Image (cartoon, helix red, strand yellow):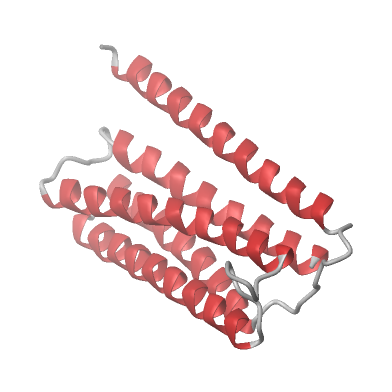
Length: 186
């Protein structure tokens, strides 16, 4: 297959998946807006830990961007370091998301159970759905690190890096939008 055609095909498939994910999150946020009209709705402040996780996901996207640049410049060691930093920041993002979940529990906002409410449950559904996709992104980064180690990527052959970067930046942008949504809608 022609390399340009292969890249276009893979990108189109990825974009289709990202549009599908966008629609799923649009549905979840729509449910949040509609449910806000319920009599049993409980507003709450976003724990500071979610601010930290937002910063971490932004920093991870910056690292990924520079990792791609390092591959373009044939600097595998720098790319490996930056991909590892991206991975570390992604794991830290998940850790802070979990700590934010625990902070919500401490103030009586639970995901499920008799003490749960619709607002905290929907918030957690969205956060858990996003974290699940971040875990998929971390697996992608591990594959990219392995392929970088095997010298699969170079300035000419970067398809895996390009696709991984699109997916990772999408996840980062999605969280920033979700964070802003909840910040102003909660």
